[in-house]
Length: 296
Image (cartoon, rainbow, N blue to C red; front, side, top):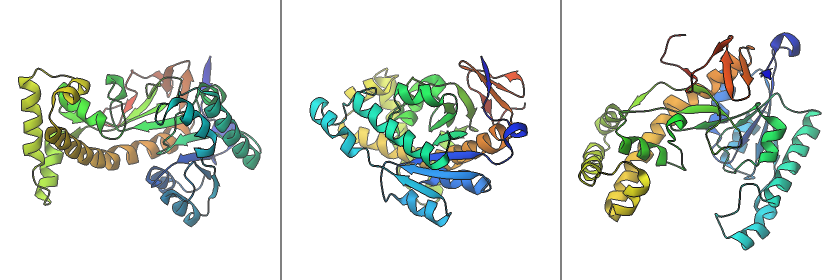
């Protein structure tokens, strides 16, 4: 069944957007900067995080509810970092989050933007809001370059890709593999590291060469194998190189595609989803969605 994500002719030009944040709030900041004239609400599971100060400065209401109390017993039962995605405690937490948001708004939001939110979404949350919940990932999810922090960049390097891309997608019941709406322009790995070195950061290119030489000699193509075979110093080098690439990709990727997708596509009534198929202006998108460097 085809579903128009937002219809400005029916609902007006002012969307109700809820941004979920857990830290710096920079994705939320860039979304608002592009168009501050929507109705924004901010939710955080980390009361007092840096993004809350940005929301207060923007005079946006903030709902703060820590997940810690809700997941305390589950952590004891399963172990820290091992709480299942769809455990009852997570569902209970999300139900309370949704209740507070919808009570505040008097209805469901037009769009939920996971803008640096560090908790899994359960199937309950997806069933309630799909396809009106967006997430961004600093990697090409269509190539399965997913994982926490800088792992996506490591996977791209080991696969031999010359570029990195950020991906904005509709959050579904998969792990960062929902239908893609937009991908960023490519960030060239060598060029980016060279630019950072020209600004005074040393050892990045040399570190990349040591990583790729080791991977070539050991015939390593995946990050899991690299982690098993590489010595500690080389793993630290990988982390340093990839974290700097991720920093740059956040600026040129995440901060560009999130505002573009919301304000230029969804708010303009241009996006339709049919199951897991995305249409923009009536045209079916390829698996990688709308790429900013391609002509449409």
